[in-house]
Image 1 (tube, rainbow, N blue to C red):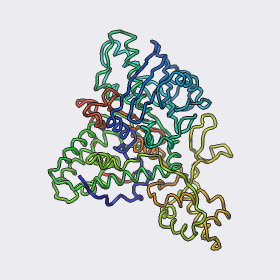
Image 2: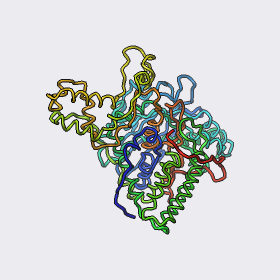
Image 3: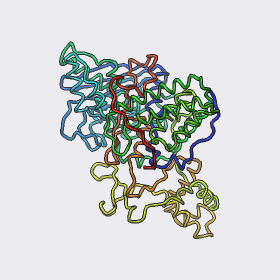
Image 4: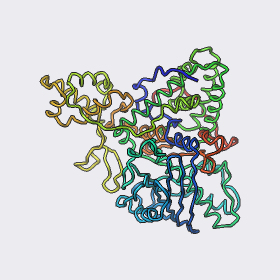
Length: 573
């Protein structure tokens, strides 16, 4: 299949926070591209040592052989305790601490990790460390699975489906934090040079640890303990939770956000332009993946609040199947463009983006060419020699949305973004509820651009950016954004970050779901997102199986379904 990339969607539509929050995990998301890489390159992952007592205290060590070199992974597990045990970073007691390192799993570095990891912020990672991580057991599922296996039977499929994970990620640090390796210097030959693959490998191995640990403990309980059945094991994921820090991340990493979305839009444009005849096998592939996604969403037991539920999306996907049939038999030169037009305004953005993620699978080799495979230069430096007239023109041409956006009134724009004193956790709230002198960590791009435009219009004597910044140094940050992001229309969410009525969960989902690949993202309080990652993914002993790379949207089992939810017409809600 081949087709030229043509029309992409306008940033005015995509960069609205409501639509950003609807973007779905897809072939370009870090979790999926990482598993595809492991399968393609025939990675070999071995558990080389397990020393864990019946209470759950001990160590598991893994060795990874890849075409780019050897890595090691060590996990220190502990008996769960209720004291200071929390899913938030402020905790000081975790059920698992661990480290991903370049090179062989040598004893000296393992022991240094054992000493340093519990210190967290005061700790120092040994040389060659890629990530440090922390995780907690699911209090509901882990013991249930252990008891069932020890008794020689399988755990409840319904409970596995409801909880989804044996362990939840509670912290994953790298890229220079605690002395870990800076990802920018890994280089193209390193097996984890693609952005976020180091984090994905760490989360993937957390999942491996959770299965190895529960089966090991069950065997300590009873020598004849059962192993998890393959279908149940595949449906167990790693839990993940995120909150307001990802909103600040979105604004602090505009090059990354703009590049990821632009590559996605180019890949989607290619897929929509595939000139499929009615008898093209791609239609059968499309139908099969839509059917899988329908069942997968219908089995989603999450209690959603702000975001639409799985059964609601499942019902809308059934409706879209009729639109697909119409596009296939309609004699259109570009039938997937016709499908795109027929969905507009009739189903939720999440349903449309689910279809988009499936369309990226129709020409996988072409889609993969749009992947971001190396660290980006994200510097924001000002060019003092630029003429003021050119700067003004760039604002009018590339940032007109920031000039024209309807901002919240003064009495509805009091939101302050800050870090808590005790835990360093990102938070936000009304300015009258935070201590005087609190530093606002947000960057208010629309208001800053409007301030910049007013300043350069006030003084015709300022002819260069350098002269402007000498006159008003406080404009340096916004000038850097205008100069460096002019060619990245998808870099900045088009929103008012000060608006009291902002719904943060949309931007949290952008990173967690779209960029990282977290799925079944249940929202709470409009600012907390909990989901699962690697549900259905192959385990280390399955990486060589024929279907290893075709793992997502895998339903738990065909007979377990939920009631159908009626389709509704979508509006901007």
